[in-house]
Image (tube, rainbow, N blue to C red):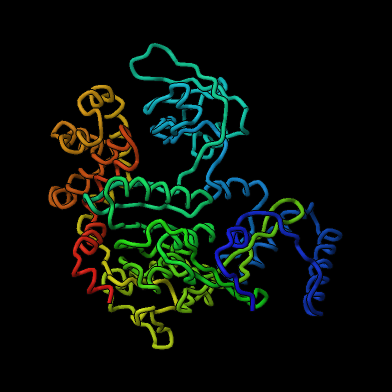
Length: 535
């Protein structure tokens, strides 16, 4: 049995980092030899005898995709033209002009120039509208997110010319932007939610996650943090190595974080080191039905060692490890090669024997069975029972079960609110409002603290809201609007703050309306309650 004494970044990284691996075509037995010959002969027959022209590459890709579907839901094929873009969010950077954008009314609008990026350095600002790229008009229905990415991303050092309309400026402003490496942050929000409790929202596990987290903890400790809420809701995972390193931040020396094994992969244990930056202090980790993979590694390790409390709802249930194998044309197969287990031995992969389509209906099934509302609707057999370091009962077999269940709260989610979301009322409204009032707003509220304390959604802004809903053909429902009004106003205020300051500002505002965050805060702020729940 292979044992890793302590965490080796390189050995972990090779589990998922997208690097080249040889594809061994040597058959392991007569059955696989026969299968390969059968496939080869079938391709030759089609190529020789089919009535029409055949695209052999397309046939091969289709065959690979269909073969992988027979294995498990997470073994996938990535065509060579999609591979780089698939890697970017997890590699922590891409090459481009450095803007966060949205498309409003068929126009590219700069939401934020990324700090330190080439666009910010040239003076491009939030609210600028890009109307031409390399002298080509880019306003109209043909302008999609993919269109923008295709035109603005490119190799570091290459140039692109953009023509920008800026309110209050005559004519168009011309910029020649030299593309550069642009960071992709895995942390969305870092702030002190109370004078002693810090909050971090982590959206993915990428190559930069560990350093981002360490910087965030250092910042919060400098502001007086004694306890931490780590929000992993809707975090679908990413690389395995940062998940292990993040767990290491909380655990003392020599504790197993996770182990992996498979039919052709001997067991490998991964342990915590002496490098943790938050080994003391109360910890709450928030999860939900969209928290998967690396998020579940962290939650499982913290729960099994009784290092903190897991609050929320049962996580997604992905306990399979993929390893990348490059094909001759630089396309790639990400093949499941092992299963991972939490320190207590739990295998948390949910069943997939009924096929991929049924596998991804799991959320709908949970909703239909009442699991999102009632914790006791989840029935798990004793065979899936395990115990934490302190003897608390935990369960495997389909996700991480939280220590504290928080039901899905649909109080504010009326039909009127959902219609508003479907018609995309708030984003254009806020964009126009900030565009028309940016300088006045920044003069009146020079920082986020003054904005949060003093800015209120007034009647004139709500008149604009109702005008937008009317233009979208929405029928006004006073009763439903009254129910959803606090959430609508919080989202409007949060988005205004995001466009004026940063994305953390958005979370500061909307989290105060989030019952799950408020419940987590109640638990971590009450010493006796936290202690009771931990035992």
